[in-house]
Image (cartoon, rainbow, N blue to C red; front, side, top):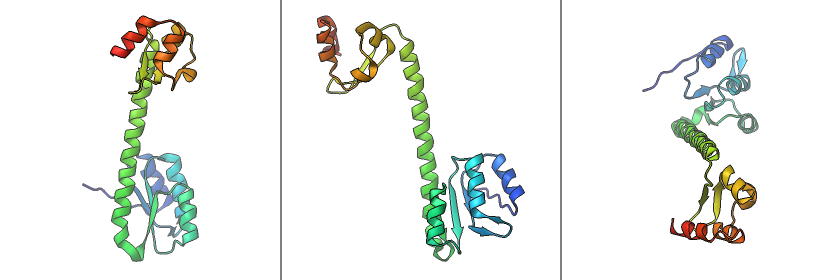
Length: 173
């Protein structure tokens, strides 16, 4: 399902940007009374997560590179229209992946905040027993800074503290 919102002026474009809900912006590079780089700048201001693709017959290599540096997702040349569909698919896929990464990061931050509120010492290790995360209680109880503990063998840090029962418990987990 696809809904296309074609705009003819800067005002209509701003209105569309403010309305949110855009999945993709497809813009010509040169337009009468309004140019593509201005459209790109406005998109970056109002909806920076939305992929922005130039479709143009006049964009040169230097202008295309400049557009990509300024935040354009990609571009397609009008006399090579067969490239447009793959460009759009890549842009939409990239947006979906970015949303998933941000959501995953948000959930991880929330979980870390919950773990940091726990009174028990919590250490997460990789398969080799190296610490990948320790909460504030572990840092407080064992006296190690989280950054210094990260990457260290849990058993090694615990043995330095004389925590034999905790080493056995960690090895059984």
